[in-house]
Length: 228
Ligand SMILES: [Mg+2]
Image (cartoon, rainbow, N blue to C red; front, side, top):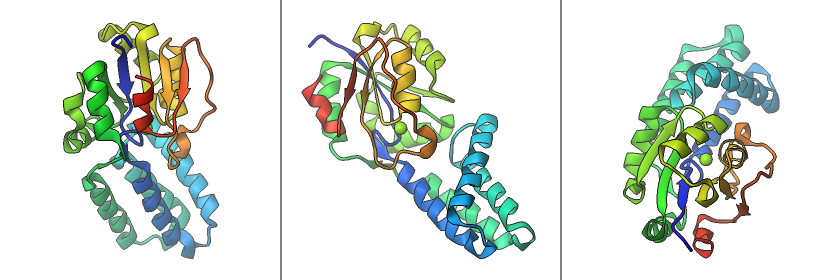
């Protein structure tokens, strides 16, 4: 196979991410139960609040914490307690310090791929937070470049393709999110490898659309070795 350029997502592709957020949300919904709101309703309000805060403040633990706090204040109303708000802040500090838990097969597969192809890590989020995660993961040695953007959409894919002179027919995006990894990459003219993760965040769900490029669907990161 000729040398390809492979863009690789990080959260829930190279390491676990959303499970830690989901665990926090479950605890949060339990905490809200005494206010009398069903869990599904509280989750719905949280999702709406997150959507709004992401537009204003971007992704990341701080933005998530803000959404939890706002949802709590809204639903608990006059029953809201300062101790609970402090508990939310404390949990955010813990989340931020959680070391990346690298997914099975990732290290050996990156070793294999980096010898044969050009790898670029492409992730979205709060720049300092994502950079710290990459650093702590120790995986940066496999990548020619690390690109962190506020949003992965067709525009940022095109910018990246131009900056790194990616030949689109020989460029791939690998990731777990239809909304951020697969659909915009295909729309930008790249090929894509979709590796679904069972804990993918609800806000990343979207139907996979086909584009001009090729689309592979694999069950694990390790399976990339069979194709590259
Ligand atoms: Mg991801």
